[in-house]
Length: 189
Image 1 (cartoon, rainbow, N blue to C red):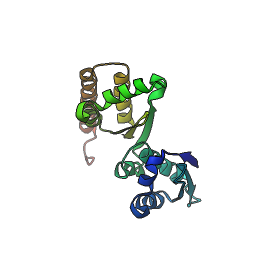
Image 2: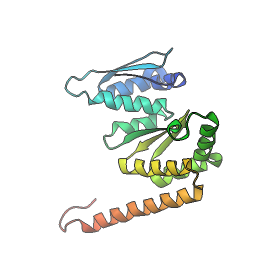
Image 3: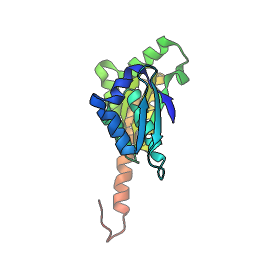
Image 4: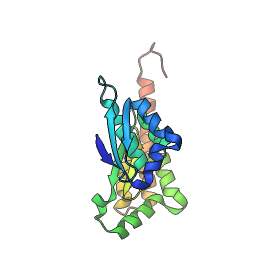
C-alpha cells in the first residue's frame, strides 16, 4: 500500500535510530519503506496469513503524519481505537484565511478549546495543516466530530462545551444502566 505524508513528519515516523518505524513494523507485521525526499510511504505485509497489519500500520503512520506523537498514534495498535481525519477544506473551501481562523477557534486561547474538547469527548486531537485528526473509540469520535463541526459552523465555544458535557453525562448514564441491568450472579467489572 502506497501513500504520502508531509515531509516535515518523515523524521517523526522514522524516530530516533529508526525506533518508531521499527515498533510499527513489529506490531503490525509489516515492512515500511520511507522516501525522505518525497514523503512517499510503502507498507508491505510480512505476514501472508494476516494482511490487516497493513491497514493498522497505515493508520498509525497517517496519525503521525497528521500531527500526533508516536505514543498517541500507537493507541491505534488496539482494535478498539480508530483514526478519523477531517479535511477543513471540505467544510471551508481552500481559503487559507478561513482555515487559519477555524484552526484558531478549534485550538482556543492557550489551547483551552482543544484541551476541553479532548477531555469532554474522551478522544485525542491533532490539528495539522488543513486537517483535524481524531483518535478514539468509535462512538466518542462521532461526538468529537460533531463538536468540531459545531465550531466550524460558528457556534460559540460555550454551546459546544455544553453539548459535550451533555454527551458525557449520557455516556455515564448508559454505563450505569448497563451495570444495573447485568443479570444477578454474573461477575461485574
